[in-house]
Amino acid sequence: SKIWHNNTTTIHGATDYPPIKREDILESAQYFMGVALLAAQRSRDPSTQVGACIVNEEKKIVGVGYNGMPNGCGDDTLPWRRSGDSPVETKYFYVCHAELNAIMNKNSADLKGCTIYVTLFPCNECSKLLIQAGIKNVIYLSDKYHDDEKTVASRRMLDLAGIPYQNSFVRMKAVG
Ligand SMILES: O=c1[nH]c(=O)n([C@H]2C[C@H](O)[C@@H](COP(=O)(O)O)O2)cc1CO
Ligand SMILES: [Zn+2]
Image 1 (spheres, rainbow, N blue to C red):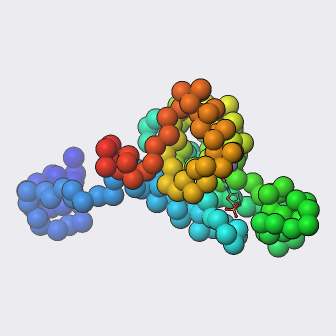
Image 2 (cartoon, rainbow, N blue to C red):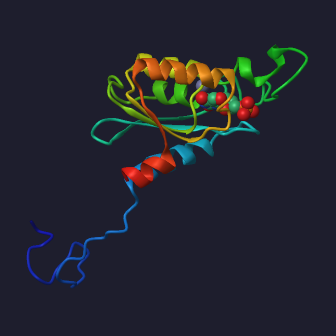
Image 3 (tube, rainbow, N blue to C red):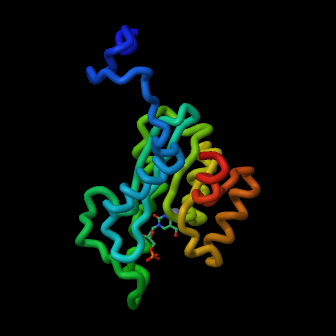
């Protein structure tokens, strides 16, 4: 091709030869979790910012999301509190989880066979969505609610559905 047309010209017009291939590129698992972490930084939740990045079997990003209030509801109108006199006055009745937003933002026809990179282990409601969407693999970062009942139920469903979940640190070492 034109890039290696002769021995002296590279794509940038430099004269290095033989061509030098960069070996220190970002590993794909770190890249996708990096996208999830960047998305999480868009969250207005004062206590826990979550990001999710859905990747198809061709390793193309097909959806990204972070936790936030529903569209048109205004980030400053609904409560961001964790506790209150009534659950109606806490964020939990309103906030859309990162996984939900990543699924709803998808730019492909479906998510069958996809992997989700998510910065926090999915809750039970999100795992239902992931299962029904056809997502086949979960890579997570934090597991800070590991012993919560919702997380126990979440693992139970993922196990039954045959969807493996792996901490991204392990994956980066094992798979790259
Ligand atoms: O799967 C999840 N995805 C997700 O986006 N979240 C969001 C909902 C809340 O905005 C926040 C959790 O808040 P907190 O850690 O203060 O309880 O994280 C929480 C979970 C699981 O807990
Ligand atoms: Zn959730």
